[in-house]
Image (cartoon, rainbow, N blue to C red; front, top):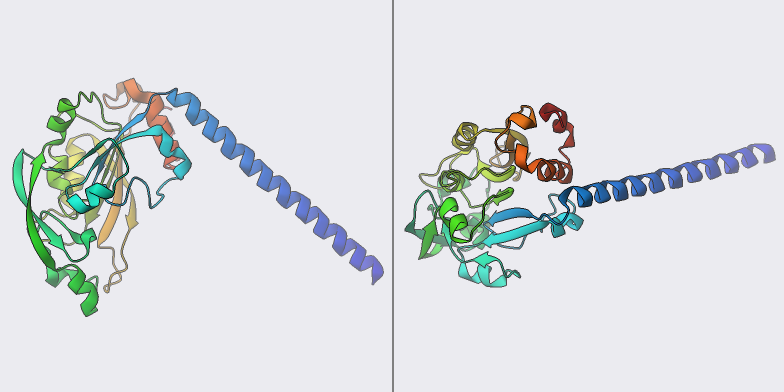
Length: 277
């Protein structure tokens, strides 16, 4: 029995050593990974539009927040109270649209549901089945906001290229991305909807069709809600340029290092070989 206990203790020590070795190996790999991204970007920031910037950039930690320092973020937020909370010097209190115009902004009881489209309470019932949650998406006020196109905004600020767009605008993603003009981000992360939770909005398939025309492929469909129907309604989609040799890609070829860095940051490096990278 004593011999058995000695063997068991020895085995536990071996497992502990192996576990520590693996932990240190992972830490070293993570450090190497971080250094590679640092070398690739070489003080070239990832120019970012955070459209619908309420709450701050990457607060939900879609990627590790240690990479935040590589992003030069232009925060766009039309709700004045939310805009005032954003701790950034690069911020604009306006909306984006497919043309320059003033639009109604339907302010809801829960700011997170505010949109330039009126909430469709009938369809919101597919997400919420309790009275309080439905009350949160009711309109309490309507304000006028100034909207501009993405390309007009970028030209006014002398922004030559957009590298990354995060867009979370409660139904207006299609209309906003229609205003890209000649700009072609390396990666787009858009919140979309599979059914119209807002009146007259465009659902996810129109966003996919539009960006397909612009040269992008959709991947990584992440469900954001837990609906009564047990089906995805609010869905985050990542778009990257269509798969081809990066040297033939108008979007990638002059920004190869930024593209590689972005895919690594978003843990999408498995797709790099499809671009001969």
